[in-house]
Length: 153
Image (cartoon, rainbow, N blue to C red):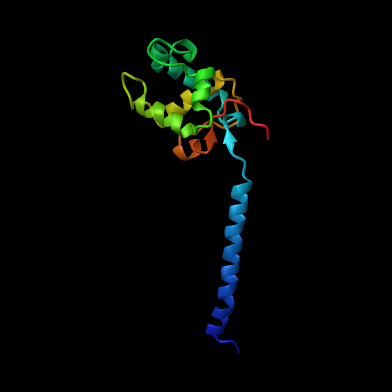
């Protein structure tokens, strides 16, 4: 008969082996996952429409109609904007919007409102819409990179 100690000694190596396999599988999956970019359809058209309405109320006074820039603030679309934000995570853009805008009332936009404005900015830049709304969650936005040129995958 095998006593309890013998069983434990036999099961500990198996447990370690299974744990190591799980860690390696997770690492392989993480490495194989393609990075997400704004070209992956990260917002929905309805969200961009909400963002357009919100921008009309909160952004156009400084950033101009269709966010092309004004006397008081830079463009939020076009070549200069794209060059400035190329390679940057959407969480950085969302934080900038949420904490510093609008200039006359900084910090009054919610995470969801910031995501809606970003969706509008992406629609103006002709980034494709998808089938799921852009979440205002910093973790989700931190996984999506603004890329001015569509990546070849």
